[in-house]
Image (cartoon, rainbow, N blue to C red; front, side, top):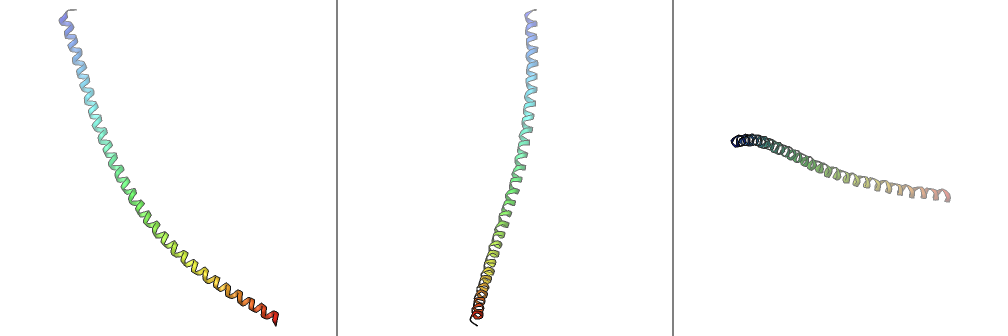
Length: 106
């Protein structure tokens, strides 16, 4: 093989490698751009989802505070009712004792 044929073959091989590398680079940059776009879209979607969940959490905290306040009010009412029942039972007990003592004495 003559030297000019060698250089021609080498040049053709280098051109083929260059074309292949160029194609690979275009595919890589295209896929990279597409993936970066997908990642940005996912981040946006997740950000919106997180914001929605934060809003729901805030709503649930508000509802929890309301329920806690209602429960505290209910407990107060029940304590008042129990205190009234206890007072009535004390009166009944004293009346019963007075009655028993009256029956015994009489």
